[in-house]
Length: 100
Image 1 (cartoon, rainbow, N blue to C red):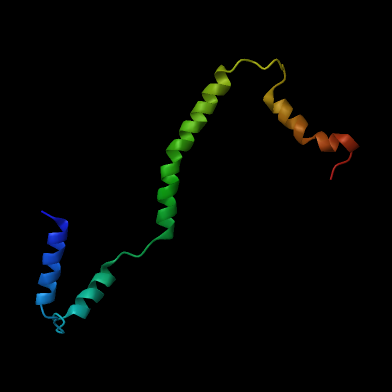
Image 2 (cartoon, helix red, strand yellow):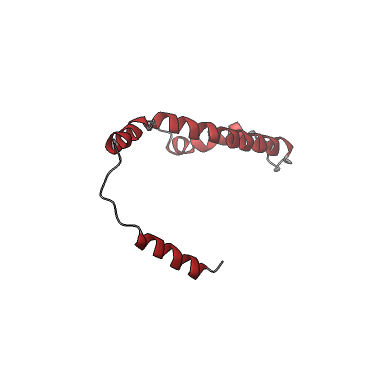
């Protein structure tokens, strides 16, 4: 069917129908009842849902990084990562011999 012809027929049918000023019985009450039934948004539930959705990708990333750490070849340094971390944190204190 031609879209222009269909549009012309629909507009002609709409013009042939007279407008009606009558409102259906209890229209306002039905609308207010639909509004009252709507659930209240719970912000905590939305946060919880988002965090549970993010948990699986975080676990996957941790597992991938763990496997990468275990199977990566040694970088030539014989020191432990914990020792490097401690030396980095305490470098400023060791510089002046003073503590904060």
